[in-house]
Every structure is written in structure tokens, then in C-alpha cells.
Length: 236
Image (tube, rainbow, N blue to C red; front, side):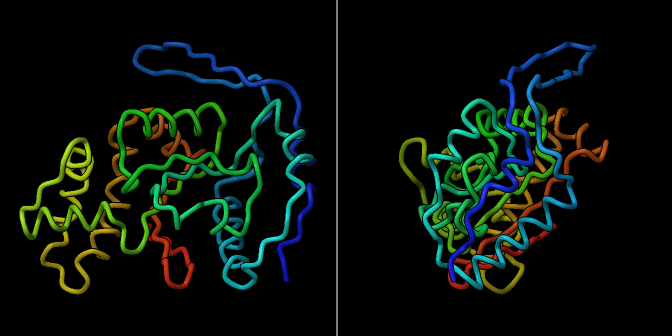
């Protein structure tokens, strides 16, 4: 049974107008606004939709051919994603597919090896929640993540890695060290700790995100994707 392809949700969103970023400095705070429509999905609805979408992926993984041309025409002038996702660049973890074949315009996705926080990823996520007004941020690690494996090797074996790879992996090392003596699978424990670490950094390093979370307009959750069974587990 393939996933039913329809544009009911897209039509409901009233895809009209363009998108602009307006920044106003108020003391030490920035106020961002969009002149185009944004999602009406609430934080609770976003969490429920993602869980249902992953269940669909688990139960009916066959994905039918979507009418991408029609969808593209609907979203060409404005985007209205309802979740911002920080995930790993691993080719086995495409968020749109593991959440049940979500279509063009539904997820605002940031990906890098190890789902870590740097200037580019943080700024992109801030844009997603403050301008596009996504009500949910999901920081998703995954089973057997290569970047996390490398961080664990630094902790256990004092391994070194060339070029910018080493600098990137170093950001994961604190998460690995935090579970070094936890017992169980060191790498998998570190995957979970790293997802939680990145989620915490969003709040500690971004006043924009912290304020939106405090107001209840945005929620940040950490998650882990299982490569073997396809399930997304929410950690926070």
C-alpha cells in the first residue's frame, strides 16, 4: 500500500504572496516578521504529525510517485514548512522520507555530519523559527553515526582526523565524554547525548530561539533514528 498523494494540506495553507525578512533592533533583541503566510500548525500538532508520519513509514514504506510539478507550482512563491529539522548528512537518513514521504515545502531542513551546531546551522534554524515560524525544532541523531563514532575514538583512543573533519568532530567530543562510563553501547549512548547536546545549544547560544521557546511558540526536541528498524525515538 503506497502513501496517498494529495494536495489537501497544501491548498489549506493558502499559498499566496512572497516572503521577506524584516529585522528591527529593540535593545538587544531582534524582531523578525514575514509578509507572507506561515503555517497554522501548532507545536503539539507538529509533534503528532511527525509521529504519525514515521508510523506510516514503518507500516507502509512504499512511496508512490507524487505530483511534484503541481506541488512545486503551489509552493514556488512562498514556503510554509511546519517543522525545522537539524539532522545528519548521512545518506541513509533523509528526513522527508523517514517521516513518511513528506512533500516539497513541508520541512525546513539543516544537515551536517553529526547534526552539530555551528554558525551556519544556528542561523538557518533561527530563520526557520523566527521568519518561517515553524512551531517545532527536531534535532535528530541516528544509530551508528560516523561522526559520533569518530568522537568516541578520540575519547577512547586519542584518534586524530585530518583537515576540518577533526574540528567538526571535536564539537561532539563533550557529548561522548559525558557517557564514556555510562555502560552499554558507548557509540549509541553518545549519539543520544550528542542530539541532546545540540538541542541544548540551540537554547544556550540563541536568544531568538530561547525567547520563542519561553513564549511557547516553538519547542525543541532531541531524537534518534534507528537505521535498522526505521523508527524515530524522541529523547526529550
